[in-house]
Amino acid sequence: MSKKRETAMLGLGVVGAGHWGRNLVRNFRDLGVLRAVSDPDDGALAPIRAEGLTTHHSFDALLEDPQINAVAIASPAVTHADLAARALAAGKHVFVEKPLCLDPRDGPPLGRAASRNGLTLMVGHLLLYHPAYRSLKRLVDAGDLGDLRYIYSNRLSLGRIRREENALWSFAPHDVSMMLDLTGQMPHTAMTSGGTYLLPMVADTTLSSFSFSNDLRAHIFVSWLHPYKDHRVVVVGTEGMAAFNDTAAGPNKLLLYRHRVEWDGDLPSVDRADASAVPYDDDEPLRLECQHFLGCIATGATPRSNVEEATRVLSVLDACQRSLTVGAPVSIDLPEGALVR
Image 1 (cartoon, rainbow, N blue to C red):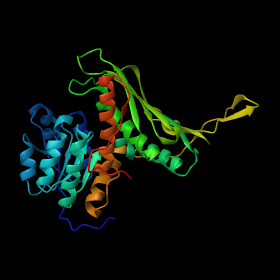
Image 2: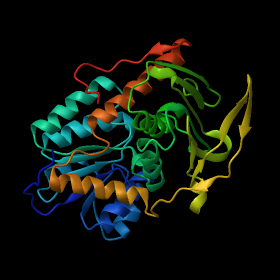
Image 3: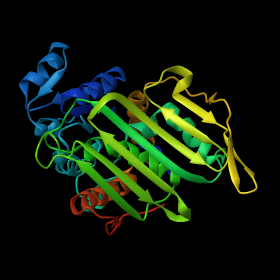
Image 4: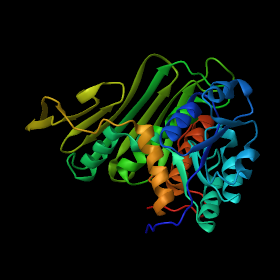
């Protein structure tokens, strides 16, 4: 249950001034709460300093600033768990970009630290805040698609190749978070295959398949070696199908299909229907996500992408990585102390 918090004027520091950190800087600055930005790379800080914003080379400087009571972490993924723990210990509310950490077992202790200190801990699963995705979620929750049968998700592009994390960990957290949110359950097993073409031990493409209860299936295909961008989620149910295509514009971004399969004895035939556009608000997803974080700080509400949700996502990613390593299906287990809705 949420409750209004008595808080002083909120001041926020952004940790990390790279590609995505600059987007957080822009949004929190426009929302009127940005106080400072930290990054050890002076070159990354230079354009931010040129805008007249306060910059620091050390994370400790943000933690020691009494005017900063919240931090947004957009540093390399391997640092997330440590920086989040240090910020919570310093009494700061924390927004941390995905993934929350690299080991699912590190998630619950961070959640307990936030709860113990009365702090908000939120993870940047951006697409949970996308207006078109929210409309898709409402379709599913209202039963407009009937019983879910299959979900597939593509997150494909050319470039932004990472050295420190593979395509699974870089791209798939968004799709796993949507898959779990749409189904309302954890898959039982995961099977992941992939290809490593550019750097040793760093998979450039992975395909993950999931089995749920009630014969529900899903797969997630990610790659940064694809000739064009394709960011798409398709949900197939007994009463309809929906496609959220984030590379499309306007009304084509979210489409509902009422195709039906008719039977003539034991012969199936498809009765095709025209796609109908599903309305959604035209707001920037990152702005909505940042506003949600600030709102949760102000009211004490639980973030949509809280530590329990993030730990479920991490558990699925961890199972996919284990499957990729051993070349066989693996079971998906939550770490001790994690909650499941």
